[in-house]
Image (cartoon, rainbow over all chains, first blue to last red; front, side):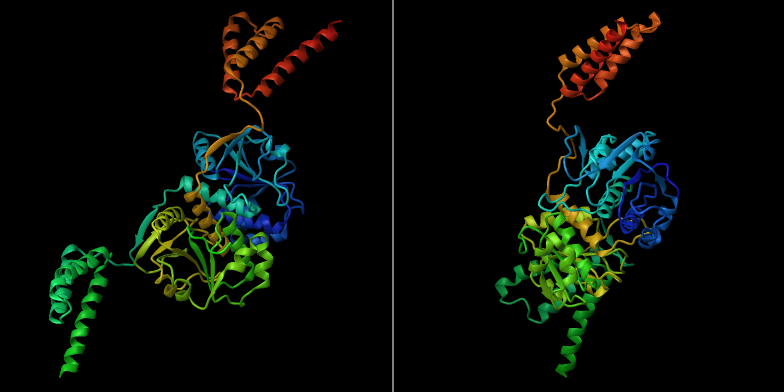
Length: 249
Length: 249
């Protein structure tokens, strides 16, 4: 749980509320990040409110490096990003969280030691802090309501770190133990319905019957059916027939 | 601020704490989403704690549709995503937030009306709720610590909606009123330093001088210099010369 080689270090600069430090630790650990540094926290350190809120991520706070000033926190870093909402009258690269974390991944792979700065809750980072950073990270928020809090900003940045470093399949299907039905099973199902519905007089009037049959076929092939689904659909139809026969007696 | 055509509707299903409803409203509005529906909130509706926390996003709560049950909330929707952390023994597509919001954008562009479900804080959505959804959205969290709260889940989904629908330049440079220096300005700067440093006896020993000059040239071209930077670097050198001359008197 100490600072990981191969990950960026998140630096909380002069954080105010202990609760927010704890929430930031949780947000980092949600996405597998563990290296935190804390610069001059307003309420001293350790902070019981931070520990209370961190719950499962408390070990990040135990291992966090406490620093008197930002220069100390960055002493061993080779590249630093500063997160900020507003533009700052400083000539500097500005990246989305996605681009920044992809770049950070590449820098770290090349042996760099990367930090990401997060400012105090009320005012954010000072220009003096930002002047120590190599680039700015800015979350593309709604310009009418750009009010992300500290833990939210940490969350989105950590989320983008994980996206940049973990291959996640974008779209899959949870099968819950089921198998997809095969073509012959769909064919059998389609015939079963077509035959019974023919007997039941469903395809009426006769000149519309061919189109109705095509539509029914199309319905089966449009649906992503499992074997269990197919069995259930057979069962429904058999039961309807049984019911009819019982009543017909 | 009413439900927007062209956006997904976020449905909070049986939310518990008013504070979390307010935080969810803020998270939506941070990324420009405004259509919220609330199903059977535990503490009734309206909820003063929700309003207090929503602050700048309170209008979302004023406009939110209150529903007795999930069927009512989805009555006019054509496609529904359910957010859930765990796998649920239901055969269903599972998407990352990124893939889901890109798909939602395309569905909405094609005229569909899309909902995204968020479960109650403690237990998340019930299987009965999820069975009403067409697909599952699952945030790729750290499997050792998958504890996202309601507002965080809303935040990440809303963030991905904005990413899917707003072109943001991934990497740019904030110029702060500055212009990049042009080639002739860099050339002039390089000569200025080379000449003064030659006079100062910097390029020593002589057999290393050519390599030192190449390295100095390379430093100027490696740095992304603005016109203001170039003027400052000229000024530094001139001032050093002036200082020397003052002391030499």
